[in-house]
Amino acid sequence: MSPEALSELIFNIANTLVSEGKAGTLTADLIPPQAKFAVMRPKDRAHGDWASNAAMQLAKKAGMKPRDFAELFAAELTNADGIKSVEVAGPGFINITLDSASAAAVVDTVLEAGSDYGKNDHLSGKTLNLEFVSANPTGPIHIGGTRWAAVGDSMARVLEANGAKVVREYYFNDHGEQINRFAKSLVAAAHGEETPIDGYKGAYIDEIAKRVIDEANADGVDVLSLPRVDGGADQDGNPLGEGDSEQREEFRKRAVPMMFDEIQRSMKNFRVNFDVWFHENSLYSDGEVDQAIADLRARGDIFEKDGATWFESTKHGDDKDRVIIKSDGNYAYFAADIAYYRNKRHRETNPADVAIYMLGADHHGYIGRMMAMCEAFGDKPGENMQILIGQLVNVMKDGKAVRMSKRAGNVVTIDDLTDAIGVDASRYSLVRTDYNSPVDIDLNLLSSHSNENPVYYVQYAHARSCNVDRNAAAAGITYEGADVSLLDTTADGEVLAALAQWPALLREAGDLRAPHRVAHYLEDLAATYHKWYNVERVVPMELTDPEARGEEADAIRIAKAPEPARAAARLKLNDAVRTVIAEGLDLLGVAAPDKM
Image (cartoon, rainbow, N blue to C red; front, side, top):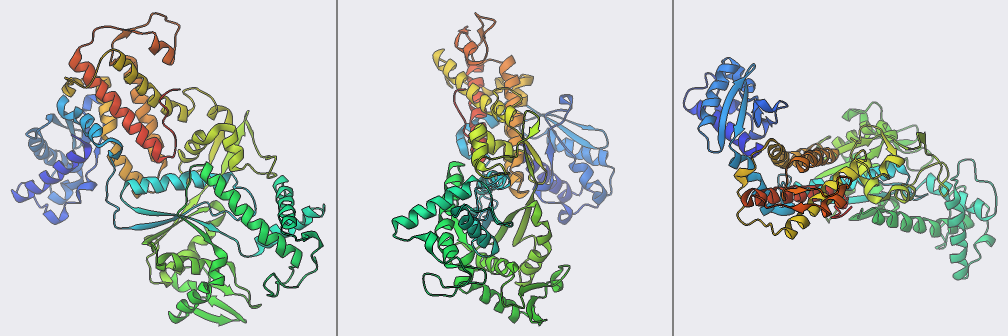
C-alpha cells in the first residue's frame, strides 16, 4: 500500500466518521482535500512503516482531544486490507504497520508501469512556457547560464512528468546596446586595437573577428575597408543609428548569427533542446512593442511626462512608474519585456497559460515591474507569470576558485565545465542544489570515482543493479515463483518504502518547481539500495578473493543454491530500484550506465 493510498484511506475514514456522527463538530466541508493528509515515514522504525497526523489536523474542528480522535481513526484503519497494526502515539500521531505483502506490492506496481511509474496528469491541460538561459549572443554561455540550462531542462522534464505541456524557450537579446558593444569589440580586435573600455574581452572575440573577415572575403566583401565613421546606411539603405558605422554593421550582422550557432551547439551538447528560439529584435521589427504599448494605453496604464512615455506600474504594486519610451524617442529595455510577455500569452501556437521566467540574481529588482505589467494585462501575478531567481555558482579546484577561461577571459563557460568533468557530472551537480542557494562546484570531487561524488554514487547504484541482473541470469534466477511477501527484512522494508515515496516526490518537485528534490531522492534511494545490497542477496554468494572490490568482486563470487521464491522476489525488487533510478536520472538529463 502506497502513501497515496493511505492518504486516500484516511480521507475516506474522516468522511465516514462525519457521516456516522462520530466526528463531533467536524463537518464534511471542513475536511481538507486528500492531498493535504500527509503520510510520512517515521524516523524511528519502531513506530511502524508510516505515520499520519490527520487526527491532530482535524481535532480542533471536531471539538475533540487529538488522541481521542486518533483512536477513532485507528479503529477503522485496523480493519483495512493490507494493514497489520495501528497504534496511537504521542499527542495523536497514527502509526501504521503494513503487512509484508501490502508493503511489497509497490514492486509489481513499479515493474508494470516501467519508466512511467510515478508520472501523473495533474498538470494536464496547461501550457507552461519555460524560458531559461537566455544569454546575450555576445559570448559563450557562462557558468550562471550553465546552471540555468541544467535546472531549466530538468524542471521541464519534471513538469512534463506531471502532465504539463512545456514549451522550452530561449530569448536572444539581439537588440540594443550590448550588441553594439559586441560589434565595437570585434572591429577593434580586427584592427589589432585595444578592447573598448565597455567592450568584451577574451580569445573568442579574436576568433569571431577572424571568422567574420574570412566569411566576408569569401562573399567578396573587404570588411576592413568599409567606413568606420559614425552614421551611414546598412545593406538595405536604412540609416544606421547614432554611434554606428558601415563596418560595425557588417561585423554585427555576420557575428551575431555565429554566436547564435555556437550557443545552440553548446545547448545541444549539454542535452538541452529548446522548442522556441525567440529573437528580441523581432518584437521591434514586427511592431509588437508598439502594439503592447497601445494595449496598455487603452487600459489606462500609459501616460506622458517630461517628453517620455511611462507605464504607470505603481497602480499595480510596483515601487515606481517605469519609462518605456525615453525623451529621445528610443525605447527603454522594459518596452521589449512588455511586448515579450504579451507575445507569450497570445501567440497563435502554444500560447502560455503560465509564463515562467528563470532569471539570474542580478534581476531580482525586475520582479516588481514584471508582476505589475502582468496585472496590467489583466493576468494574475504568481499564477500566469512566475519568476524564479537563481543564485551564483562558484567553481573550485584544489580548494581555490577557478576563474580563468582560456577562451572567454575571466569567466568559466559551459564548455570549460563539461571538458573538465563531463555532461553528467555538470548537469547533476548544478541541479542537485536548490537554485535559490549559491552552489560550489568542486572539480576534483566531481571527476572522482568515489562515494563522495554524488553523481557517481547514484549512477553506481544503477550499474550495480544491472550487474545483479547479470549474476542472476548466470545463476538461472528469474521472476518465476517470486513471492514478494517474502520481502520482509528490515533492509527490504527500507527499499520498499523508498520506492513507494517516488510518486509523491515527483508531484511535489513539479508543484514546487524544485528539480533538486529529484536528485536528493535519488541519493537517498541509492544509499538505501547500497545498504540492502550489502546485507541481502538475490544470489547468495561468497567471495573467493577477499581483496576484490566492486564489479570485480561480483564477477568472482560463486553462487550457492538460493531459496527460489525469495531470490526471485529480490530480483524483482532490484529491478524496481533500477527502473526508478533510471527514470530519475533521465529527468535530470543524466545517463544511467549499466557498467562502471
